Length: 178
Image 1 (spheres, helix red, strand yellow):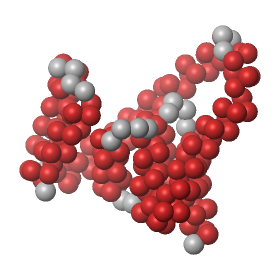
Image 2 (tube, rainbow, N blue to C red; image 1 turned 120 degrees about the horizontal axis):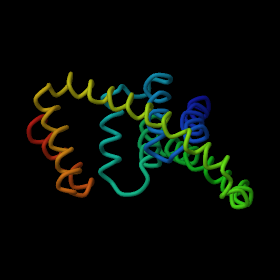
Image 3 (cartoon, one colour; image 1 turned 135 degrees about the horizontal axis):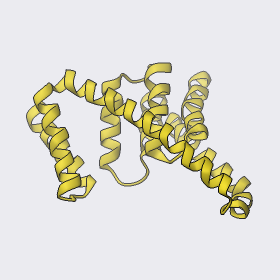
């Protein structure tokens, strides 16, 4: 069981150390660890965890870590996964706060952050493609296309709050796909 705890720690610590941009940016890294590397969840289960995590308040990464950690190794697993998720930020904040504050206006620091954005965008696009592909096979082209178009219109054109759009999609799935 100690090996499982260590694997849980690494599965959430490493994405949070190398991930830049917060929860949404590290989700593809967590997916690689949880689905591809350790096989604790399949892509369908991961996408359901992601959807549920998005429907609830608070940061997505900690919710996913708690749920996946609990699924893998109970309460202790949840605690370890959540700690591994917040530990990199906590350590960086404590250790580098003064350095970042000193160089926050540096052109090099600003350039580095600008150059990371395209990589994050590609990672998010790949995850989005995987989730759409999974939705297509599980729900069918009409349900998937309808939800994609509907979500786009509600979010971008009508400016409906994302939590309401996600809740609506969950209700739709419960009624028509359950």
